[in-house]
Image (cartoon, rainbow, N blue to C red; front, side):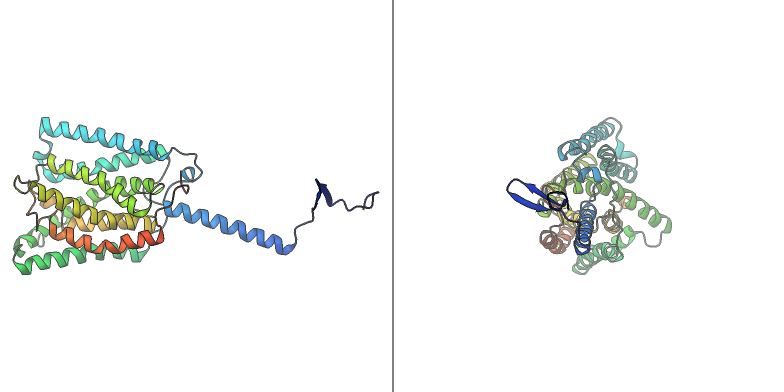
Amino acid sequence: MDESGKDPQITQISSNQCCVTPLRPGCARLSHLSLTSNLRNLSNLRILTSVSEPALNEKGPGVGLAAMAFFGPLLLLVAIFTGLNFFFGFFRFYPPVALVVSMWIPGIAGFLAARYTKSSVFGVKRQRIRFLALAIIGPLSVCGIVRGALWLSGLAPMQNDLRDVAIGSGVQFAFGILFSVLSALGEEIGWRGFLAPLLARRLGFTSLVWCSWLPWFFFYLWLFLLAGSYSGPAFGLQVATMGALLFGLNVLLVWLRMRTGSLWPPLVFHAVHNLLVFNPIILGSSHGSWLTGELGLGLACGYLAICIGPLWDGSRHRLAPQSGDGV
C-alpha cells in the first residue's frame, strides 16, 4: 500500500481499471501448453510442406522466383541436349546411357533451385515402412495384373517379356536395377523433390497434380521425339496414352511425396516401375504397341484406376497447404 492507500499493482488506464497481478499457477500451465501446441503445429506444417524454415518465415524467395530458378536451368539443359543429339547423334551411341543422363536434367535443375531457395529436395520427415511397402506393392500389382491380362489374351507374347526382364542374366538384371534407380532418382529430385512441394505452397492437391504433371509430360514428349521412340501412324495414340500413364503415375508419386513428407517412397515406386516396365537396359529405338508397350494404354488404365484413391485422400486431408501457409 502507498500513501494514497492504493495497491501498486492496480493501474488506472483511461476510464477502465486493469489489474496487474502475478500469473496464477494454473494460468502459467495453460500458457505453457498453448505455446507447446503452437510450436508442434509449426513443426507439423514444416514436415507437411517439406520446405525449409526460411520459406515458412517468408524470408526465402517467392514461389515465382523459385520456379524460375528451377525451369531456367531445366530449359537450358534441354537445349544443350537437343543440340548434342542434333549434331552428334547422342541417342545413337548407347540409348540406355543417353536415357539415364537425360533423366538427370530435372535432377540437376532441382538441386540448383534447392540450393538457391535453401530447401531440401529429400524432405524432412522419416519414411514409414508401410509407405515403402506400398511403393513396392503398387507397381508390382499393376504391372502383374496388366501384363498377366495381356499374356492371357494373347496380345503380348510371354517369352519376349520374360527375356526383357532379364531372368537368367544376372549381370544384365543388376545393370537394369542400377539404371532404373539412377533414372528414377534424377526425375524424382526435380519433379517431386523440388517442384511438387514448391507448388504445394500455393495450390491444393488436385491443382498440384495437374500443374506438376504438365511440365513432366512436356519433358517426356521432348524426350520421346528426341530419341525417335515413336511410329508415324500411331503417333497421336502414343502421345495420348503416354500422357494418361504419366498422369496416373504423377497422382501416386505426388500423393506419396506429400503424404509422407519424404522423397524416398515415390523414389522406390518410380524405380520399381522402371525396372518392371521401362527398364533402360532393354529400351530399344522404338517403343512397343500403343496398347501393350511401355507407355501403352494397358498400363495407363491400370495406374489411372488406382490413382482415384490418392486423389480423394489428398483432397479430403488437404495434403497440400493452403495459400498463406508458406510464402
